Figure (cartoon, rainbow, N blue to C red):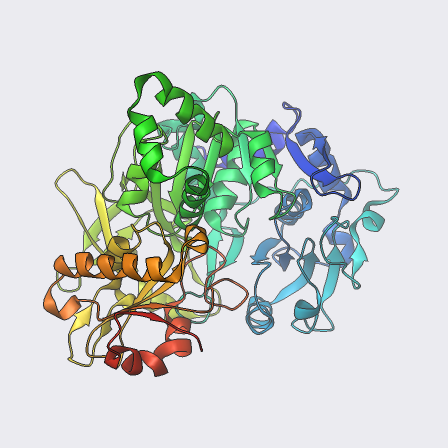
Length: 560
């Protein structure tokens, strides 16, 4: 297979397509007033070649970081790094100071691109004073970066520099730091071979289905340093010559999505739940059920909802980064929105399973993609797989590498099984299991799926270390804001009875605890991909588990 063609494909397609990036820019004082800045692949390549990183004293193979929310210049920086013969090391823009400092020092970067950030004060002290910084042009509504060389100044009055570096398959493309769900982030080393194989397989087997599309329109909002977003959005657009639109801000996210109506859309389960809550705030579930059964208005309702979600043109709709509950898939399917699940890891350069095109499935996380081989540990149930695009290891951490890479097989840490139709089912993370005071192990994920069906619940985390029985900590959804505490109490009390009827005695939930604090990235309760950090949840609440267990109330409002 001529993988080298797919490594250099970025240079080829830049000459062929126009209107490739669309960026929302504010006009006037109101954020709702906006215009769209458009540029082309040709202009993108030209701008990239204006920025000669070699002139800054970097040597081939040096590590270069990117710290920014998604934007046009993120893509330019990523391209400039690879085309110059350097290694791209992107960081989550939302990282708190301590974690940012940890990954910056671990990564051994020689230069850092800094761009769109919500604030600068919490980042400035995390960076070594000797680290060279290039700052992107300012994006309105974001923090002003007071340090670094301005991007525009570096390319001013320069002629494009022909960066003709062509990497070998085994050269390092990127080092991606994991989100640190269970501990210290790890730097996943991925060679160009990994993306070359993925591009080749996509062209050959059309796994995602992008070759069926007449128009390739992508909307970028999940962090670009998350591999799924980077491969599907950045990689997908370059591979097909499609266009990428970037959201202006969180406030304008929905409006931007509605304006773009992309043909390819990828979101995490938490966002699918948020979209669902937004719809149910406007129309009750009971009324929606009635309308969907009425032949004359059913199709009109579906079209209106899809348009309001920005999905009226979407032909490839993906969900992943965390497990998507069965009831969420079923709910969207009633609206003719088929969520195709992708399961994978940074260590495997993205997805290893996907719901095949044309298949409808509420269970499992899809079937193995081409070239991925699975086996299940007979004792632990751990999912183990191998493929050519696996990482070469964790940067500067050989011991952690040896724990997960054994004889070419990656030990994922996920627990699951393959059914008779070769669908992979993921039960949850092995590390998520905990032992109650009674000495019995609890697997929280399936229980959380049962609880999260309730529309008043935004997030749930089943806990129970030190407690005789597990408890469920709950964040309420937006739908609960207009409902009295008494009605919420009664609703959740009924839910608790219903859920416990389905559980074995040792797994029965002793009580629901409605937490005062909403879990998010800022308080470090969620990862940048919006997954719950169970270890942080335990750190914050474990001292209360026994107290809550001993209370007579089964639905508890935490007011501390």
